[in-house]
Length: 114
Length: 111
Image (cartoon, rainbow over all chains, first blue to last red; front, side, top):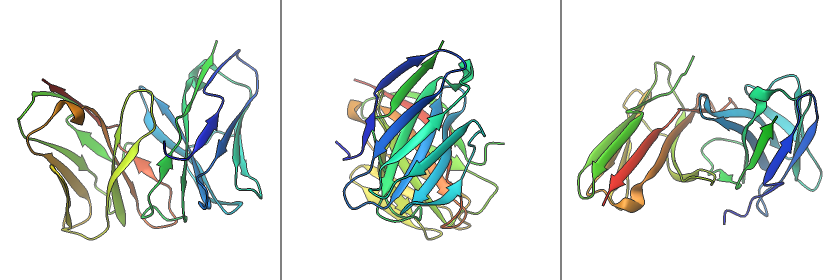
């Protein structure tokens, strides 16, 4: 158990819908990362927050948005969903913002868009 | 463009054999990490390397960061079935830059 929690574990929804994925970081960790993992693209970095502020942005679509709240939990919002958005979404946390610090990954949310 | 190329993509070997997997790039990275991921779970960090030429050992696993900080290797001695999994390398060009993951090497150790 990494100490990072993600909800829900599984999510099935239809094209065009909007969903919210939730992540609670390990106690004491200030940085949260979001990743998308699919079979063909591998693990893709989406976005990073550090203590409530956006720190780095990766391959995140405009239909996707995220935020980190004062209690440090984070939410990833996916809208106008397409079939290609079906993937595993991971959240990770680390004590600080730089890659040299260990990232602890949550168990992931498996999103299926039908 | 995949900036971190991992090879081989798949590797299946017998228990007790040695193996090396690679993570290569044409770019320089300030730090590089190796993770192992098992089915249905998130990746788990194995090691972080930050200095060119650095070698780190974790039991039967030896990690090396290239002198030019463009590549890395993971060597496993006397592989065991418990080593089975997806091995991912990840790097960042600077401490504030986005993180890039390779597509991974899927390793299967046959008992």
